[in-house]
Image (cartoon, rainbow, N blue to C red; front, side, top):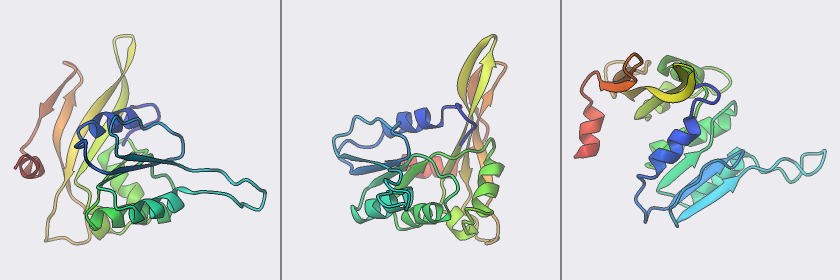
Length: 195
C-alpha cells in the first residue's frame, strides 16, 4: 500500500522475483506495469469497451474469474480500487489457498483495513483476516532528493478472541533519520515462512 508514486508496483515486481521459477503465475492489470522473468507467467490486461453500449469490455473482475479457472499458484492483481466484486473475488482466492499479491492506495495499515472494510469494497472481517502482510510504501526526501522507501511492514494477527476486528502489528519500520529499516518486534509469521 502507499500513495501515488510511492513505489507500490516496483516493490511488488521486486518481491515477485522470489517466486520459484517453476510456479504458475497469473497477473491482472489495468495498465501493464508488472514485469517478471518467470517463463510460466500469464499476463492479463483489461480492455475498455469497444462500443458506446459497452460491448467488448474486459474488466478486472472478468480477468480475475478467468485467472482462477487457470489454477495459478501465484496471483498478482495490479491494484484493487473501487470494485467490490474484484475485492471479494481476490480475498476468496486467498482463502482457497492461492498466494496473492496486490497493490492498494492507502498511506497506513489502518487506512488499508478501513478502506477494505467500508464502501465501496465492503470486504468482511473474516476475509480480511486472510491477509498475511501489509507493506506500506512512501515517497519522501533525503536532502533534496526525492526517494521511495518502505515505511513499515506489518503482519495481520490470527487471533481467535475477537472475530469482529482485524489486529496487526508492525514488524519492520523505517528509521528516517538513518534511512535504515529496523526490526521492532518478533514475527510469528516470519518464523512460519522460514520453517
